Figure 1 (cartoon, rainbow, N blue to C red):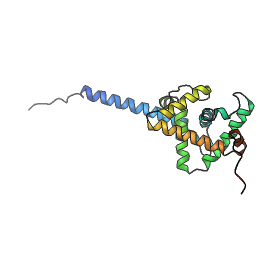
Figure 2 (figure 1 turned 180 degrees about the vertical axis):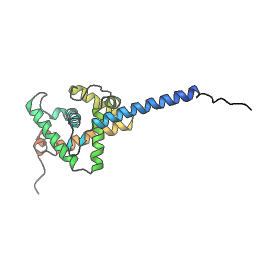
Figure 3 (figure 1 turned 60 degrees about the vertical axis):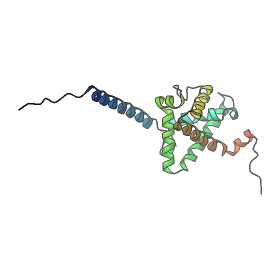
Figure 4 (figure 1 turned 90 degrees about the vertical axis):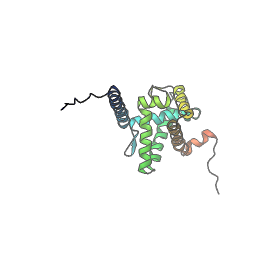
Length: 178
């Protein structure tokens, strides 16, 4: 009778297990960061969501906004964010959840860097950095950054251009009387 000794796990198996655990830990950390920094909570934009969409507006609407640092610009962006909240609240819950995830991904530093190449927070980024980050999202070879850009830009334009007071900034006189 021979007594067979159990063989230790092979080095490849140990490497695979360690790598899997590392990937799971990083994924959980990034996912947790996105959850903590979600962009829409219940019926209002979170501070992180406001930061993201305010910066996107600075990048997308730049020439239509008053000069940086002016009270008019801040008032205009505050009104835009209120309109954006109303727009998001008019959407089904599934869409609100997707917008929250989008803002969470863009607010979370690791995922923002992976998607847009920008490590700086949106609030601390200059208008030029925001424009560059949006260009990176738009021109990426991957689908997720492209969709992220398209969604953020579409939401921004819908929320901004549904405010009749801002139509004159683009030369639109408003709907014709019939």
